[in-house]
Length: 218
Image 1 (cartoon, rainbow, N blue to C red):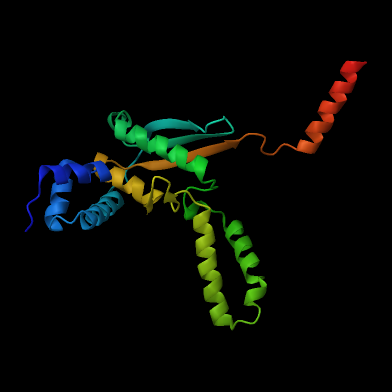
Image 2 (cartoon, rainbow, N blue to C red):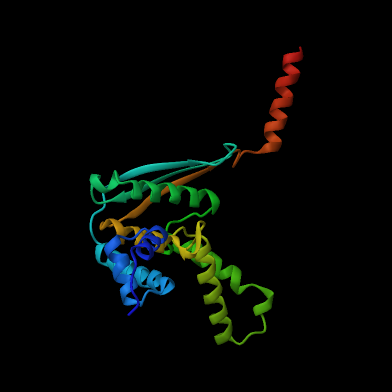
């Protein structure tokens, strides 16, 4: 077995955010291979997160992110189990990163289960009506539609997005890694994304401005 140096443990901790003992264990289990150790920690984090998923998470923080120039802003509520963890810098950093992710990757839902059935059905109808499927046998056509629908729904959900700071993991994996580090259930409860001018009829606004200007000249 390869010797596990303190420097190697430190490097893995900085890369993953996992605890020192977990990092040492991961390196020991993978014979000092950092890439395999990262995967080991991710699997451990996933298992740990699944065990904690049913626990009540009613504490936490509301975090925000305003993109440079002030044209995009995000508010997000991230929950944990205790006020102690809510005050931890690792938890606050996670919440900030979640807000930043939402600003960078516009999504409508947190997880696939949140998407209303009518939206899923609408997407299915759109895919089923595409010309490239018209001559496909029914069984093959259904498999193609199902694959496309799964991809489309993931594009609409936050937890399935690749993390902007590490494309090798999804947002779901990022949260599970943090759960493994902090030892509490963590949930993204809700968010809102603001885009400057979104929903405003620009043509109508310009007309109103012209009228106001004309009135001011009289």
